[in-house]
Image (tube, rainbow, N blue to C red; front, side, top):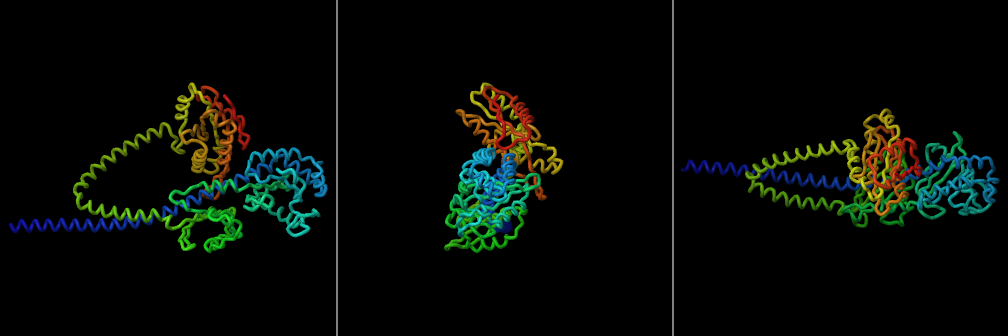
Length: 543
């Protein structure tokens, strides 16, 4: 009997030892998991803030790029070149006199200026054409035609007569226009307009006759719409987050959502001043830089992520209190600690039961996962484009067959075809070509329902929109297509420093009755006939 007791005691001791070892291991794992998850949660919170900052920075960059494209498009019109060539043949005195008297023929250019200003919309602070003597030849406000924008002031702070050119200021403008060149834009940044008193983006673009500079065009774009867009971007679980943007060159605020009174004033925040000093000599060709820092203000601790936009020498920051940013981290630690205690307790009670159950569950989960993967793969292969994730031509054919017969509402179909896509593959490689295809779908998702975007060919994409009660109208649909088209024209920057500047053929059709897959054929014929698309010149055809 003593022998049996000894064996039983030994068995119990072994079991206790095993349990103790398991408890120690579980406790160690719990501590490790808690520390690891805590660190990862903090990193995720920072990455989330960085992503928001990068998103805002991209919106700002797109805002500037679109404005520069509008001005470049304006500068290359024949009406602008013609009026500047004729203006250049006159002395500034004669040109100014004729403009004020209404005897200088600038009607064609003035009509074109007014039309393009209307296309730009309410964000347009002023679109104008200037001679090399800075005489306003055309302007959205025809009351200031003939005004000289770079003249000497009779009294400091006042542009009174005599209208004498300030040659130093004119030379500075011309030099900057020449530095920008025929392909570039002289961007003076976001300023407070001396005319309207509102904050706007100020741009100038030289106009060339062959290689000779004959004048320039200017554009002011209000930033109010951009600010509304930035303010509309919410950050989940960070309701008190704010953002600001500082000009690296002069350390002055461009935006500050926390205190709008700081706009145009130099920042006093040491960390921002240090960043401005650090990046003052940054090359405009470098990519955006994102990082974070922490600071104290009014007795509170803050964390900020920043994005440096080298091209315009701006720093965009997203700021929030550390207590809000890391709130999830503290909650996670509490829950993980409780969870660890429960797991350790359950490990002791259910060790042997759960081990067998785990094997059964793993086998079952593996079987279900394999079945789901097989089903998903088959579905993807049949109806989805593997590269872009968009629906394929088979899906389009089935969807048109379903909605086209006896359709009571009209449908719009838009085709976007990458021009000379084979040349992109040849010049930049198939991988970068694939990258462009994926990017097309991602851009179209911003303007069209994801389920209504199709890749119908190697470089061809179709999206459709159903009307409801006659809406959207044809003009609204063309606006949507033009917005998507301008987004697609944004250059694709490659990892090796090069960039792809894609061009597209675009066409839109509107169905007025039942239809079938022939709408795709109509779209193809339209794109083949119209050639490369231009913003505002996209054709819509009813069938």
